[in-house]
Length: 207
Image (cartoon, rainbow, N blue to C red; front, side):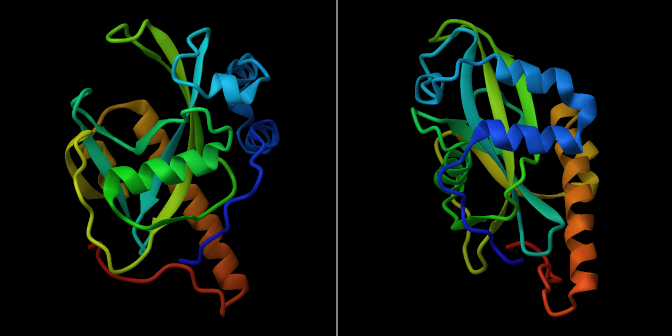
């Protein structure tokens, strides 16, 4: 796959508008994101609880575009995408990249500037008060030649076949990302057909 340089500065409002143009059926969720205060630095802090804070996630693909790296989350005991808190960084794409690298030990690159998916989910009260995470998800690709490292936030990591996602989870948020990735990959491959010299996917199994 080829890589895309992270946009600087990242503008969530513009990115959400582009996302809405692709997914008109998610207008209600987009409006929920727009309810978050305009002070992006403050609402990116993990102690911003009303209504919640912005988080960044990475749908991390191998170079074939067929396998995604998921974490078996230590706290939630479920297979999930990589990602985490913004910690005050308003550049959500950069947050997703940082979290993917920290949680996998891999060198990763942004694959597409467009938002892959958004999700608003409630986090029950534990060490912090109950709140909502406003999660923004991006597609990334792992650079070749590396081996993942399981961090203390995970029970395990695994490269899972996107087409077999239903065998690992019934969580609609995860299945939705798998469907959207399949659509995005098809658009990328259509561009490859139009420009044969711009090959982005390579055959082979993940490391």
